[in-house]
Image 1 (cartoon, helix red, strand yellow):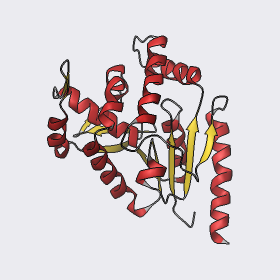
Image 2: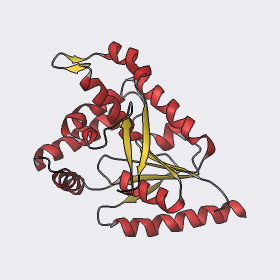
Image 3: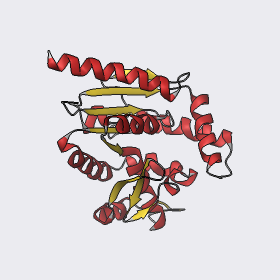
Length: 233
């Protein structure tokens, strides 16, 4: 490919954004950045440090701790996948648990947290050739992204996907609790004061309720090809 692109993928939780973005990155040999995992890693750090407890969230403590948080993505050749590392520790499985899920939207609403994460994301994206997914990539982080996708799917399908994913990892989870959590996250993401979940005006909607990953890849290949063709002419 003669031109490196920035591909921004936004959308609701448990839509398969990460799976889709990783597949695109592998095919194009791009860097994959999971912005949602970054906020999950911050949430895990706060839980471990007691900054989230029965008394609530210690916002001031979190602000002071941000410089102690380092998040990177490492490609695992054995798994053929990217994994999230928090301060030199692989936390990929732990950040996907229900406890982190219950708090991540609230942590991501803290302006200082978002500013720090956006700063890190933009540093990674300077050279282009990246695929990033999250809630505000096309609207805030990379408003000038070459391709913007907004993903959605039905609540029931998203809950089932999340349930199957966690069960496959051996976790004892309840479908109805997961569904309730997804609905609550949708409301929180859409209504937060800082960078609420919005479809960018120039984003292309992908409703993957009834689509396989292979079908989604066929869909994005056509979009990438059209974009590169348009840029050359």
